[in-house]
Image (cartoon, rainbow, N blue to C red; front, side, top):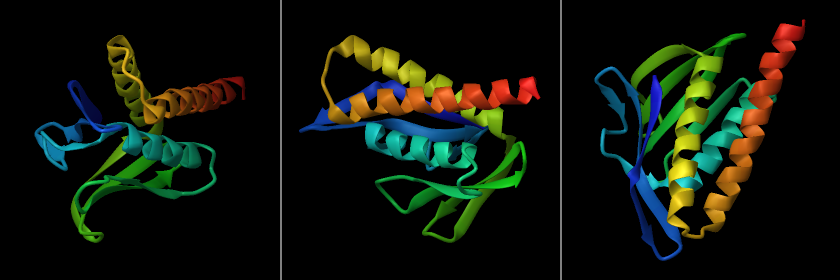
Length: 153
């Protein structure tokens, strides 16, 4: 299961940036292989949700898309496993997968980092992008601390 962000698809409409973003597992794409959404806004939401999960503040979170009736529900299955439910219309589960939480968050961070690097090259300004860079760093630090804690015990 991977997050896919097409940094070449980023476009601007007024002060908002859009881009193709989806989740992929083999030939399953959610919401679709060419889904376009408010890229920085939703990534900021998703990072906060992942931080809540990794901080053990909650055992369930939702990754919302701004456009359309789609979301990904994430539940802890056990200490190091997430169950991801891909949902349409608030209750129709399209698919679900179990995944190691560290693997999922690590791959998520890699994809967001790639987007940040590519967008930085454009020299375009965005408050949402600046927030994304800060939130990315916070999630990365939290993940690194979790890994370090595990190895120090």
